[in-house]
Figure 1 (cartoon, helix red, strand yellow):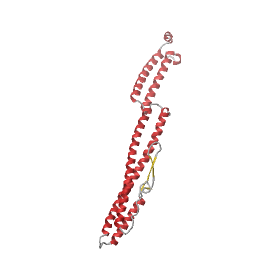
Figure 2 (cartoon, helix red, strand yellow):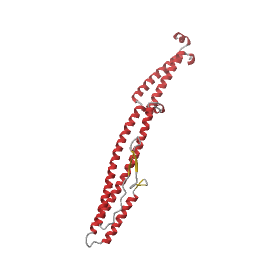
Figure 3 (tube, helix red, strand yellow):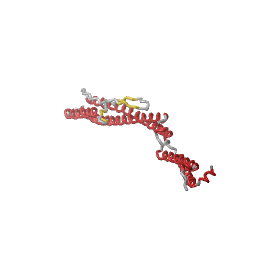
Figure 4 (cartoon, helix red, strand yellow):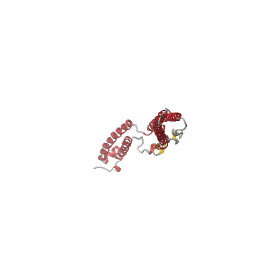
Amino acid sequence: MPFEISANPVAMNVYNNLAIHQAQASTALAKISSGEKASDPKEVVSTGSATGLQSTLAATQTAVTSTQNAINVLNVADTAYTEATALLQTGLALANDRAVPGADTSAIDAQLTSIESSVSSISSNTQFNGAAVLGTTLTVSVNASGSTLSITPDSIAAVASSGDRVADYTNAVGAVADSRAENTGNLQALQSTLHTLESTITTQQAAIGEILNTDIAKEMMNLTAANIMTEAATAMLAQAMQMPNGVLKLLQ
């Protein structure tokens, strides 16, 4: 006749061991399933090292977002400078035509006025995400420490209107070329910064992973061992529960 576990010391001992092995199997399985070293992620995240690294990672990711946004803005500025340059070069060609004796200066002046209006519109209306680009200062976060960089893409100045239209347009083309060259330098610097930040994030994520992530091979071994011990304890418990009191007393 089977005995209650509470009245069976051997069965009670086997049952306790069974519970331990089941808990070990459950813990290993939870780690494998979650990919985290602790079955409760808060157990590890609460440690100072992991929390500090995660805070630094978040700050670095903020810097990446800020830098990428600035790169996008400067790319828009570059497009504006390219379009303005094309218009001004057309204007320069017209200004040279205007200097030719017998040229229809009135018709050419009308074309130049239209070009100058278009260039002014580019300078005033170039936007990124609804915000003006040219002449607007960007404040860029460039690292996890909160260091910032200020960049202001130049506005495009109106074409001067002196008696020498060729000189006016030559100077205007040169001014935009200078602005574009400065913008290109800033763009390249930000792209280099972005590359560094992305490499830093990879390193930080790897460091956090060393603290938080499960060693899958190790936990698979733990799970297998716990399952084997659980099966053995289950079999032993079944046998212990069937042992008569007299035999149990002899074994004690």
